[in-house]
Amino acid sequence: MERKYAEFAATKACELLAIDSPSGYTRKAADWVKEAFSSLGFDAQRTTKGGVLVNLGGADEKDALLLEAHTDTLGAMVAEVKANGRLRLTPLGGMVPLLHMMLNCVFGGKGVGLMN
Image (cartoon, rainbow, N blue to C red; front, side):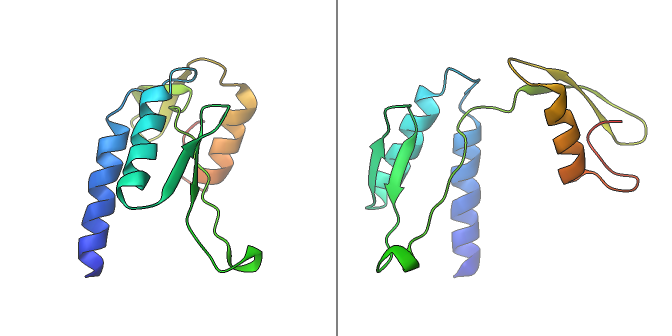
């Protein structure tokens, strides 16, 4: 049964990731998310900022579940895969140097990381 859910999640992730959604042009991705949750019987609504709000249930405030994610594509493009396995990224849109440092902290470590 768990494999069935994992395969379902992987299929849905591939469908969503196939939708172009650069910052400022996320309507198609948000529409897809809204429809995906609606088709599963959840009350999904678009927000005034263009996001999708879904009530996933819960008995009360203490039992509530919040899932938050961005539908826009990360503001960078892989420019090179270096010999050591690290990536050199080219910023797109509003990606700032601070984000480079944050990504390196999150995905970095000794001998690993997105940037040098």
